[in-house]
Length: 378
Image (cartoon, rainbow, N blue to C red; front, side):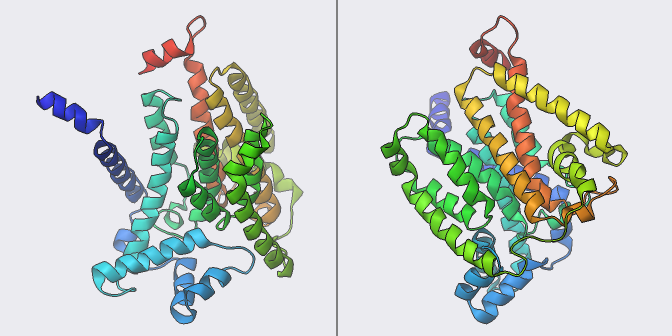
C-alpha cells in the first residue's frame, strides 16, 4: 500500500512540482556558491539601482518606456518590480531588503533557465545527459566576472535569446493555443531586440508544410505583437544619435570576438590566454565539421529541429552582438582577457546546450538503433 501511494504521488502534478522546486533549490545553491557577494555585501549594481531610481522618482510607466533610450528592458524591470514587492512584503519597505530580493530573483531566473533545459529535452535525451545539460548550463564559464551576472538583474537580458529558441521549439510541437508561451515570447522581444528577429525566423519552421492558416493561427498574435514592439524600437533607435551601434570596429580582433570568445570559449577557457587566431580558426573549423557530421547522423527529427533552431539563433545573435557592439573588438585583443563576459554568456549557453544535444549522437553505436541505445543509456 505504501508503494502504491508513493507511486501515485510521484506521478501526480504535486510530485512534478516538488521536483521542479527541488531542482530550483539545487540550482540556486550552485549559483550562490559561484557568487557569494550578494550574501556579504548588500548593494545594487549598475542599472539595478538606476532603474529603481527612475521608478521611485518618476513612476513605473515612465520607467517602462524610458529605462533605455534605444530599446526596452521589460524583462529586467519585471524582476526589479518583483524585488521591490518582496522587500515590501518581508521587510515592510520597498528598499530595506531590495538588494537581497534582487539576488533571490536573479538566482531564480538563471536556475529556471537550467530547469527549462532539463524539461525541454525530456524524451529527446537520456536522463543522464539531461542532468549534465542542467548542471552544465549552470556552470557557464564567465572569466572573472560572474559577480556581475549571478545575483544581479541588469544582465539577464542576454539569456532571452536562448529562452526564445527553446519556447519556439515547444510551441512548434503543440497543436493548441499557448497563451503563456506567447506572453513570455513577447516579454523576450521587449527585453532583447534580437528576439524580435529570431521569433520571425524560427516561426517559419511551421511553414514547411505550407499550411498558412495554421501558421497564422499559431503565430498570428505573437507576430503582431513583435511587429508593434519592433516598430517602437525602430523609431527609438532611429532617433538615437548612435543608431544603436556602440564603438568602432577593429578588424584584427574579429576572429577573437566572433570565434574565440563567442563560439569555442566554453571548451577552451582554461587556456584562453595561450590561444592565437590560427589556433582558433583551426579549432573552430574542426568543431563545426564534427557537429555537422553528428547532426547529419541524428535520427530524431525533434533533436534535429531543436539543434537547427539553436544554430540559427547562434548565428543571428553572434551577428548582432558583433555589429551592435563594435566596441567589443576594441576591448578584446590579443587574448589577454575576456571581459566584458556578459555580452557572450547568451551565445555560450547556446553553444553548451547544442554541444550536449549533439553529443547524444555519439552514443548511437553502429548497428544498434537509437531506441536501443536510449534504453541502455538510461
